Length: 80
Picture 1 (cartoon, rainbow, N blue to C red):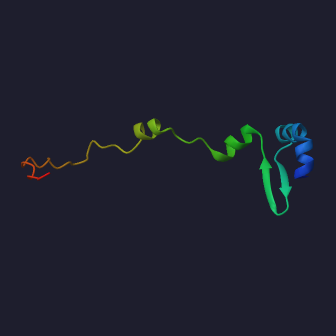
Picture 2 (cartoon, rainbow, N blue to C red):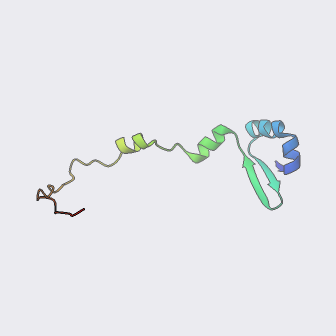
Picture 3 (cartoon, one colour):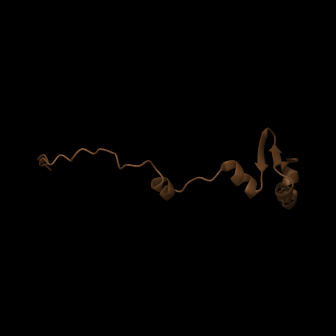
């Protein structure tokens, strides 16, 4: 359903209830619009994002990665 901003402000509880029971509710102000959706609908649309820890643990395997040995030569002299 489409709502004008002033009406949606006055009936916010109804807007939220309808978003949960009927589906997305559009609120318009001039040419701009926003959509109010229930949390389960939002999660279904957005998908679950992995945590940083999960991303690290499920990333590409590094077992076959060839790492060259570190240069063991002495550091250069620097005047401070």
